[in-house]
Image (cartoon, rainbow, N blue to C red; front, side, top):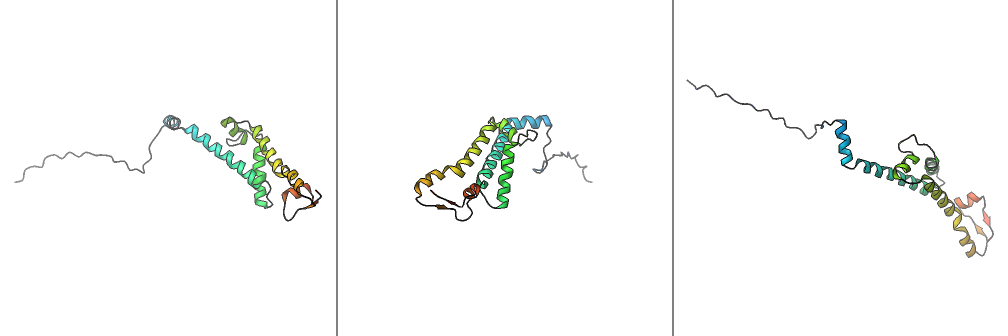
Length: 150
């Protein structure tokens, strides 16, 4: 006859798959994100949004292409808007980054004026004859002048 089998102890070990989500309480998530620099990452994202808007403004300010003009117009409206209701509005981003919104607005307007008009006096001094605008020149078109005497 066979001896009775000894009792087998079965140990159930739960092995977690790396694809299973961790369960966190909201309080734990907030604490973890603060420790991991969550606020700093948000500020970096806001800075990136601001930098992109400045690039859109500057790269498309004098474009004749309708899509690029629309991009410029949207960027200009975003900068000039006093809206504070949206998280990524210009005013809110400046507030979070501790930047004066009016200084950026003034700087963009001055850049545009300087770019459009600023270099003209130097070129006028070099020119001995009439200046003729050839092709799509946003500066000449903005002035409404095709031929200018120096």
